[in-house]
Image (tube, rainbow, N blue to C red):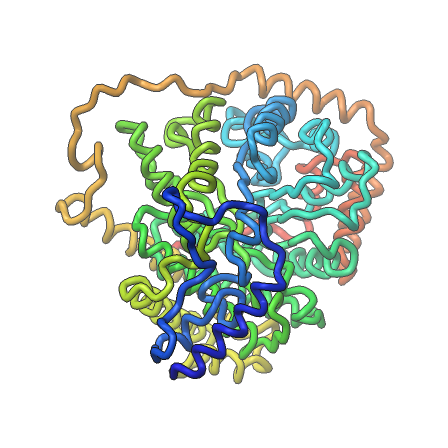
Length: 575
């Protein structure tokens, strides 16, 4: 880009920055030196990279969504938490909110994630162990007791049974007297990544996509601030993918949901702002920063050029980040504090919109109050002490970071071509291929490729190969993990970890039994029958599922009714 165009861009940015809201804060260094809100090429100097780098708040958003960076609004501190029963988790939420968390993020136990009630045989020994047990709306009432759902943003990390859980959340908000049309938060709902990586599905892909389409339409019409989809790369990376695979698989999933919305007749400029993303912040500091910057750029370009989004908001990639659980070690666990801080800083330097920092003991158990507080304070130190919020995209223009951003983007584009080829489409420019092939597929060309890749086990194979390669590098000494592959001696004693008593499961089951006896079972049966009727036809399923949640139908009952109609999914490994 020539010097004149760069100067014009700087002037455009300056006008937007001047008119934007900014925090009242000191934006000097620790020694009192003044810092500029953004840095770019010196005046009068041309830089061919600037067309791809741009300015904060301007297409292609490589440097962030807002002209002010974190001077305008800092990232939301959102600690992922849930364990035992609803009362225990409620107490942890109140502690987190009091300690500075800006939003809640709900972790559910395995039975809930699989759409099972706590007293089902398959749930034995799992209740409350990796998250909170939620069986019906009353549990949701207890989970948020004393917490105004109209005044706090709530993220729920669940995909297979996401819609019934969401309806219980809506019913709980109604019981608080909250106008559900004003709720704000995020539901994960990303079923593609379940087939690709995490394996917590219920039905075959097509019924799940129908439920997601119903949710997108419902939220677009009735809960405009709520984000019905958080497209998740986190679990793909945790399964062993590379950074480029995480980026490409995640964005392809996002493109598929855009295609789903368009196939429903929804306006992309109306529904695309309701899509958000969830990425892993792994241990390679610069690679992660480059990944986040490339993600914004790719998403903006595809939304504009392939799917026709006209507004900035529809082209924005908003994302939450969690530090890498897979990078934590049981050996020398206090090293995990350092790993988490580095990973969190990478997410911040990459412009994350919200952030969860893992606790040092999470490789062994759910975090204790003390380790959760350390994880939370890690974000506070990064936010308030090191000056990282002073400048938007502080590494922008770095020869290394820009080259790495371009390289990861190019690797992602190659993977997009592979996905499109699985759907029967070929070419050299994946965005052009997807745009030209849109009318040849029931939902869209990217969706066709993803469904074929799931069916063939292609995603499983690609991730397994990447994980195997990394393991080989650890074993031959090419890569290192301190305390695991080197520097084994330690003075660190064993940690005291959080243990979930078996009494939690017994009490949860007893309460659930009494709840079933005390409800209007005839109303529950009618509500379940209405769900099945809607599932047989084409009506939106959100309202009948919401009615079942209001009647205290259990999660297992709702999901069981749909399982009987739609069947269960069995994967093909492809290995």
